[in-house]
Image (cartoon, rainbow, N blue to C red):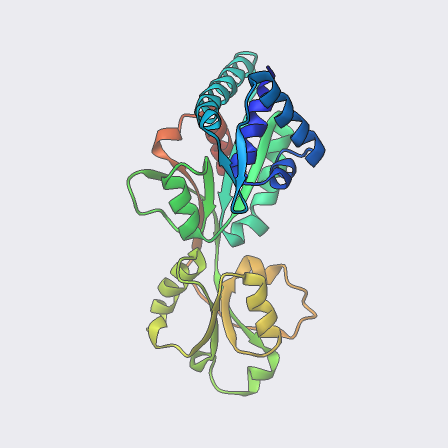
Length: 286
């Protein structure tokens, strides 16, 4: 019995697809199918069946699935422990990040972390800050980078960088009315940028709910494209603005004074776990 057969079986069922499992495991689909065949041959029973276009567990498959989860988790834990004893960090670190940190902070962190700990497999999931924090609360992530503090006792946050928000618009609007009149293209309400925008606008006595908003999106690149198309103004991170081609027809109409911090966040139950701890220390000292 090969432990990898069990890992493959779990991945096939979890993703409901041999193809998706092959991609996730960086294997060929025939290779995944062959491992599944070997496992079923070893056990002398079928573990999966096709039903209404989805993969279902047979009665035997259900028992093997539950036992496989335990075996794989114990094996991974043992493997990690032995490597740590040998002075190496190893295993998988699942990092969640909101949009702006994922583009402008995370790449350097990942490069540095990989150079220090080459045996750690890095998995990155990008969502807005709200979704990332929720995933951390439910232990779907090991650590996260976000643009707002958690605000709950179960998550611990450490400030790692600062930024400012800027108002951008098409240069054609320089001769028109004040940018405060809009129209605006804004980030979705659960993003860190949206939370920071609310605070920044309060500096000017503006109420976001009374702004002339024509669109909202979770895609910061789309916002910039819409501004280039002269659909309206947008409030974005200065990190985004600094990385834009200066040949674009975009002008900064206002820079907010207040700093917008970014945080590395971890569930309090995992603050002492070796991998999250190492990543947090790297982010905090970079």
